[in-house]
Image 1 (cartoon, rainbow, N blue to C red):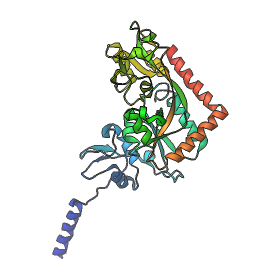
Image 2: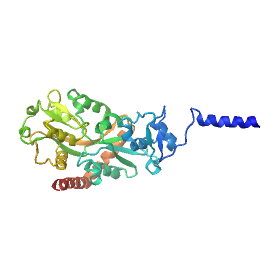
Image 3: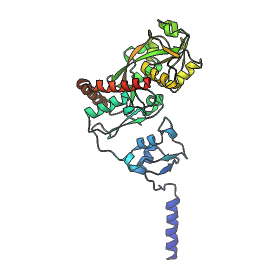
Image 4: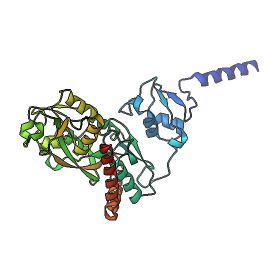
Length: 344
């Protein structure tokens, strides 16, 4: 009997301390990453199914741009059940449709704006009009370049917005970044058109240049992750110019006022908003001669099994809004908020 008791104790200790032991883990707790862990494995352990997106979104600042790279010893917050509930089945293939965008692109995407921005509002309504039964979410991850370089290829999210589509039919004239986008991404129909232009300090003369050749040799600031197709079209890419790419449009205007950049290449409406926020409206001028009209779209990675069907849903919703007049109402509302902010 004594030998049996000793054997049971030894067995219990072995089960508790052995290398294959799985600790009890619940949602709403924290989890310390162990060797061999992945977000998918942790998700199955915590929720009983693959819900790694919720864990990534909860810990995006800690993990960084690649959800596949988690470090041993990293402490992760496990989402609570209401934020990580297993979704119902969905014809697209996975239940939850997840869009990613970022703050700071006013008036189009920013959590401080009504409906989180004009473009965010358009995408939300398109989904609701075409497929009201499909649950979706829109998450803000403030690293634009990570969206296309990492988050969509790794399927951490299904789609990102807003993006411009490169001229993929003329691949010989594309930059390496644009060629990558053509080879790996598909796009929705245009939801909105912007005017990409150039801003410069008053008195520098760049606001009166009427030919792009007059900008060659200058230093141009364009936020990191923003498409550079219009710069390529105008022949304003290195080595013809010096291109600097800080993380935000606000940083670009800071570089401009410090003399580190001659020009800021940015959507004119977004530029107006940033200038207003920084109190620079009377110190910076927009060039009225050099600009490019760029359609903004939703981008999806070709490897995503639901990309084709999701694009169909988005395009159908956009068509419904255009025909009903709802698109015009949303755009008017978004632009009125922009004007109100500039006036105030």
